[in-house]
Length: 213
Image (cartoon, rainbow, N blue to C red; front, side, top):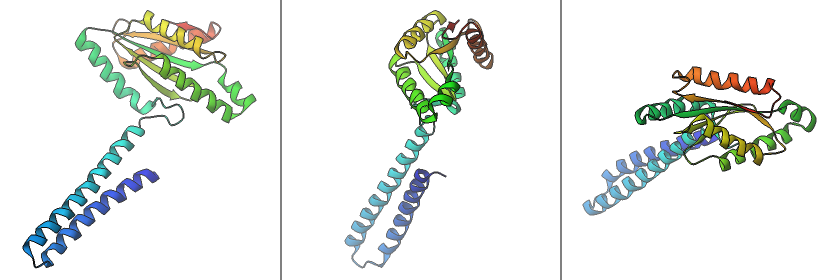
């Protein structure tokens, strides 16, 4: 359990303890009106603390879906969000473009400039991705220097154009990408991701710094 999670748990337990002890002590007050007032105050305070703990837990849940370095969503959220976007495309009769992106020669960056510099490159790339995508698009750090981008209601060709603009904005950092389209090319989501990954590999073999759709 992380320090934030432990703090949230302590707040929740403290709130329930305060509520229980406070309401229990009310029975020893002789004045009925005073008893009612104290009971109301204790209940309000206890439930306020409980609500604060609930909000804290909700915030922690949202943070658990984010990659702390880049600010993008993390891999654990990808499967859920991909299924949601595919379902939305099915209902609307639309398409969903998926891109797998990998920073070129990133191992050499880490080896020659150090991991702290590599982290700065990843952080800067995450910022550029957020700036380049539309509000409806979703980006994930898939692992290491690899990313997955979802483009709802988008054909593969349009996603390629977004990636080309992203490529221009992050120079001299280079990346390669593979793009696949749902449901036109693949209806199985695992196969869709695999197809985009295979096209990424083809872009790497063709000389890197390329987008293959």
